Amino acid sequence: MKDVLIGIDAGTSVIKSVAFDAAGRQIAMAAVPNRYETLPGGGAEQDPARTWTDTAETLRQLAEKVPDLAGRTASVAVTGQGDGTWLIDGEGEPVGNGWLWLDARAADIVEEMRAGTDDRARFESTGSGLAACQQGPQLIWMKRHAPETLARAETAFHCKDWLYFRLTGERACDPSESTFTFGDFRTRAYNAEVVAALGLEDLRRLLPETVDGTRYHAPLSHEAARATGLHAGTPVVLGYVDVVCTALGGGLYQGDVSPGCTVIGSTGMHMRLVRGAENVHLNDDATGYTMTMPIDGVYAQMQSNMAATLNIDWVLGLAESILATQGIERTRAQMIALVDAWIEEARPAALLYQPYVSEAGERGPFVDANARAGFLGISSRHSYADMVRSVFEGLAFASRDCYGAMGPVPGEVMLLGGAARSAALRRILAAVLGARVRTSQREEAGAAGAAMIAAVSVGAYPSMDACVGEWVTPLLNPAEAPDAALSSIYERAFPAYEQARRALRPVWRTMAASREG
Image (cartoon, rainbow, N blue to C red; front, side, top):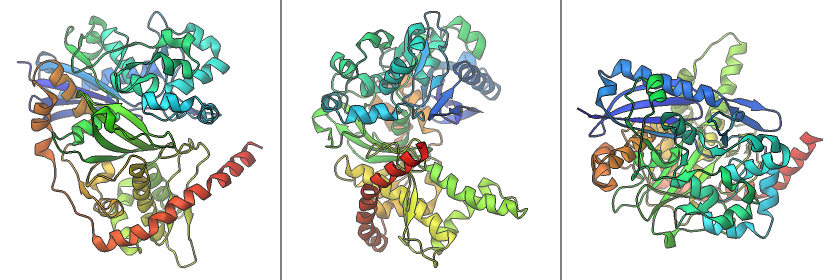
């Protein structure tokens, strides 16, 4: 009996394959650490061959945990990290390493194009602001600096597109990722005027066909069957980009309800559900993303911080390194266990922290590759606990900053990602946003969202609404209301956060120039 759906989620740090039963209950998971390398000049690359072999390994490991996995699998769906550029040649071989969303080499190109008069028209079509992480600016960089690489390439993929190709032999992209880079979110198709605005008409040949996974699936190839242990011919679905799948699996779409959704992962994603293209709010700064959801007429409007939990890793790493110099070893799990106590010890809004710790700068709700993290308001009376609390508050302020660029803050926000387990973070976020915060019991929302697309594609459910009713709704936890007194404190502090990040931009630029000098 075909009673298992597999969702593959190829993230930046981990590749996971997750098995679900027909009702959406998680059966088993297998994971392999992902690896990438950073290069001088802001490069961040990943080996496509290894990414594929690691993905196949997760499927083989999954088969060790699920009896007769190959015989029971109704469909496999794949999602993965967004943005980036993964080139292959006519024979299907990689042309160099894949460029990741972390790659900052195209930052100067983005700054140049955003200052031009033509970028607004491109933004009006895609609904997405230009950023160095995107395939368009990365292809422009290659065109200027590595034309020989492009001459060898026949298709430009994103990470999940590459894995779908290795699973099926088909060259394709999904509507969410193709339209926010090169298309029109209203038509869910490529737009020749956008390609022209980017100056990439001669590279239009690299863009693969767009396929909607809710309506189309392809058979697992014999080669992929040998690599994964699954049966050749098993339906394979190209999922939407990972953030859309995570939002879908985590509860952004709930029938008639329109919550927001914040994902605190390596990056911070903040989403507003929009019904009808006419209701998409395109801000004056031309930032954020508009991504199609796997439901007709429904969109996820997004603003994305370059760094979220990376800030937490940094501030905890400071304490770890200091302890290590004294011969005291503490694991990251031990350090995280102390966080809630530190936060309770510290006074709210004692410091302001700008959470721009990524070396790629910031992309939401403003684009500035020079942006850097920092504390404001430190005096001799402040402690390490104050710093820890202010880092968590900075993440919440950044979330509010992002929601403000998309319109009103939703009355309820789904909080996803590993950091959602922190009661302190939930309390701070609810108070900063002035919104109810809700979490889900779903452990692997990205893989679940991909599997949900597959469930609709193979006819296990007549619609996404029906699938959501069984896979999502029963797993939602009760909403947590904001603390009124804490909200009042943060309401007074938030304007200073906004003022600081605007005032610091020329400082960041001067610092960047001095580093280059």
